[in-house]
Image (spheres, rainbow, N blue to C red):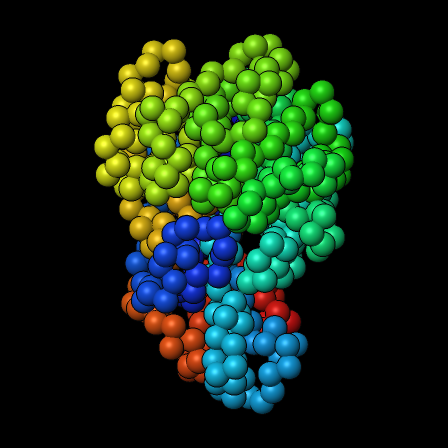
Length: 444
């Protein structure tokens, strides 16, 4: 039975906007208040999915969440009909209004942490939706994420969808953006690396200027819930200087696939011991591609999002780097990529540069847009087939976006009740396309 790494990409919502709601995310802060392009964003995201599918990889879609979420505004004391609520929130606290329009669920790497059945004691695929408590605009996403995952992976004999961890700072969890799995092959037991920013037992371990969003306590709780082998589980701390440079998640400074680990030398607080801890369970078979300050500084890593590329295994067993155009356009980063591709000691043979500019301006690259789920043929067949990308589904989704999405979205438009109603109607149609009836609260 074959085993596949399936990329579940977040479909970018019609409410995609630049509100700058995420402290520590440099791109998000720098572009706050600009006019966004939801239609272009969604088409860029779908184009990335199609590229991966055409390379012979398994690709799927995660639907966006219900936004704007006017029930959240009502729970915060805003009264009246939809128009009145939007106007009142716009006048009293535009940041709350923007939070309730946020399309941040597009970054599916934050949706959950996933452990394949080869790694878990009960031989089920385990998923824990991220509680995302570090930012208000994301802190209630886990409710809808849990609903969606339990609809898509409904077979309890093969899948275990946990509740999110307690919504409390001690268990702050940002999902797979701080998690990498290494293995000899996807169907073999793997070593799961959990990366955290702060540990309550290490005073002063966090960053100074920006939030350290992932806690070690959250990582340890997920590892226990997923029934992982402690000898195949590794915990590592982000370097606080990296967080303060804009590395708000580990996937901005490190990536891995199979037995290949690519990272910047300032990614981790203890890089040397980490490599030993990872290599030992793999029998020493860990291939390291390390970028040094002499190659490019942390600032280049953050602006180019090189490490937020997808490192994928192609059908011919070579690897490809799915990188943003910003990496190609940075001469130092491009030179590093070229050297890695030319190096015969690693399986990386090619790089494909994609335009995901709309997501990048909000602080999310190719890897942010996808959740990796390793599935056997049997598990894949038990997955809801309506979200598995095919050429007909791709064409249908492109047509849906082109017909319905706004070309531009300015901050002042977030108080428009007609636009709000239109966005909800679009999601209603999407559930018919993906065959996910009653996915959204307004449908129940």
